[in-house]
Amino acid sequence: MRRLHVIQLLPALDAGGVERSTLEMAQALVRAGHRASVVAAGGRLLPQLKALGAEHVALAIGRKSPLVLRHLPALRRLFATADIVHARSRLPAWLAYLALRGMPAATRPRFVTSVHGLNSPSRYSAILTYGERVECVSEAVRAHVLRHYPATDPARLVVIPRGVDPSTFPRAPRPDPKARARVARRHPELGGDGPLLLLPGRGTRLKGHADAIALLAHLRADGQDARLWLAGAQQPGRARYVRELRAQAHAAGVAQALAITAPIEAIAEAYAACDLVLQLSRQPEAFGRTVLEAWAVGRPVLGWAHGGVGESLRHWLPEGAIAPFDQAALHARVRAWCLHPPALPATMPPSLQAMQEAGLALYHAVLGA
Image (cartoon, rainbow, N blue to C red; front, side):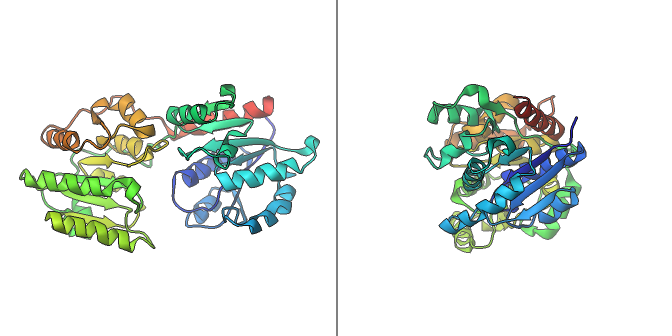
């Protein structure tokens, strides 16, 4: 099998599902003996990318300005060495598309796109359906594409669910008092013997932090010493939002049982320390990696039953799927699970290796076509 050169494009190498998928496919390519390049601005994941043996081409292709078109000549020069150009975000996809159109057909690499999110339908978003193959990260994403872009050939859509590396998210005992004690030393608000609820997610209202705080208030009103950890909500530029959350918690009388922290690298330990994981996004998400990660560690997940999260919950742990925004049903299910924890699925979630192998197969399929 000949050595391939695959170039992935995205805005930057900061934390997020798109970024992680990029690194995971770069890892698979290098491990299989191929050449992997990533075009993006820098970010905190750049050292990890370089440690994998992938190449980084620093171009600010995520900046929404006409000046971004100045990168087209550089992209064409770079693409001349590639077999596949794989765009994972809208503006980088437009730039890749324009750069490819300006190349001779005989030397033009194949074009692959990924739909990682349930973006609002528009001509701008439609670019992600232009790939010769279109990777969809869930069945929910595939249905979204076909519903809003009916001209898309279904045969070009390939569903590749995200996967979990069991060595990164090892199964932990339930409960895990040692992990809870380590977390409580860093965040004393999370100590005690009552249930610890974890909602991982960035600092935006879309993640449903307010719903989680309301749930905490209900549980503590029941007499439970419940604690809530909003891991990742504290971010640069989000101080005002965090103040709103703390004000809500103070008004509800639960501020002493709430920890709002920055994103954490040791997320597997956070799962191990908690009793339940919440996924309460106010808008449907494309996939929701936290669901599979928590199950891999051995923690049940409850969430609103919409989008990719609802798809995963219905498949793996149906009783964790709650009708969107039904606070009473959420409260009742969490209260029941705190008293009688549910049995977890006997089957482990999809593996990272399976996801990577499917990605490599997609590349070979488009070259074969």
